Amino acid sequence: MTAASTEPVAGEPVAGEPMTGESLLGEAVNGLPADFVWGAATSAYQIEGAAAEDGRAPSVWDTFSHTPGAVAGGDHGDVACDHYHRMPEDVGLLAGLGLDAYRFSVSWPRVQPGGKGPVNARGLAFYDRLVDELLDKGITPWATLYHWDLPQELEDAGGWPVRDTAYRFAEYAGIVADALGDRVTDWITLNEPYCSAMLGYYQGVHAPGRTSFPDFTKAAHHLLLGHGLAARQVRERAARPPRVGITFNPVVAQPASDAPEDVEAARRADAVGTRIYLDPVVHGRYPEDLLADLAPYDALPPVEDGDLETIAQPLDFLGVNYYFRNVVKPSDEPHGYRSVQQTDRPSTAMPWEIYPEGMTSLLTRLTREYGDLPLYITENGAAFDDTASPVDASGRIQDADRIAFLADHLAAVGRARAAGADVRGYFCWSLLDNFEWAYGYAKRFGLVHVDYATQRRTPKASALWLRDAARACRAGDGGAPVPVE
Image (cartoon, rainbow, N blue to C red):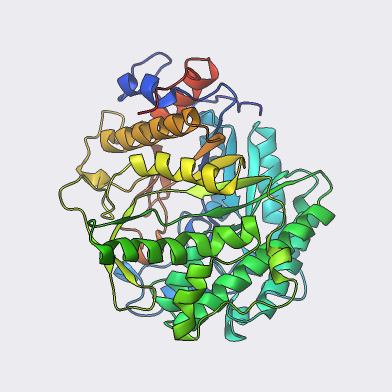
């Protein structure tokens, strides 16, 4: 993959100026090959804004975020980072950081406002311009077809628990493949179906805010069915031969103790948070222990003839999102586990435990249990209280804690590669501070600081550190074997 141009970022220090975290570069890129893909990720609802412009209709997140009490601070994505109007500037930031690839998502209600029927040409044209802008800057576009913004009309008709939604998603995927498939070759069907199904339809903390356990399993199954149908559409209709994958955020579950009940809780967490998705997609079946867990709650996946064959479409790669592990104990809830906060370990502002070892164990496990699929880290990053970080004379946030987080997790990727995991790239979450779902604008994951009042973008020290890590890797300073502990 061709490296992007290295145009200067506004406020970037002169070439050769030492960056905070320079001593971490060697360890971070150790074990990463020169052709490793370096990128950043975003999603449509979190950055685009322009919620009611150019024919876009409401999504479940528009409705949910305007529901009193649903989102911290009463925040919503009506404006977000105003990326819809500032897209060339944001692509310029990517180019200035010398990143190879950009993972973005396409907004279904912007392209097909009702979730079915006519295409909104003005909405689709935005992504046409985005792809051209990326390619002009030497950046490879990675398109995610679904990052949680279901058109509200489809939710009103039943949402993901209803089978028809999977067919509507396939229709939409074909529309996008027709429009962008002459230039986009890297496609992700779904982002984190765990969050769409579990958090949205059972726990109610994400859109659409429903709380039915049977609806969770119905949604999970139809999301996977939609993946399989969409993968077929992309492969049939993209003008250039596509690479098609899906992104999961597997629950990395560990028992709180060796007690049998804690070990059982971890098994149940793994079944309902990891294997419920990976086993059908890779192996074409649901795990037997999962089905036994679900049966007492009348929550078996609504499998029809041919579904599992459709779901198990060949994957060209697997996207992996990792942020933290779950240390678990039993729960009376139908899913059977609850997470226990590890107060004796460092955490991010979420507060999520910082546990890079989980990255290595997850990647090696995926290789061991699901074959030699190419793996890409499609999200990894951290929210910290940037207002408490030092600010240098140029106004740049010196976010040393984020740099250390990225360095530790990249080193964990190197250890996984040394153990045999075919990890080929890393997309940092996120390019920009943005609307962080139910947390609103209070949590900042960005490599680039966004002043929401003025929409001014300022790269943080971590952005330039990631730039330097990518440069060191391409120069061949990485790639050396890493000892496996």
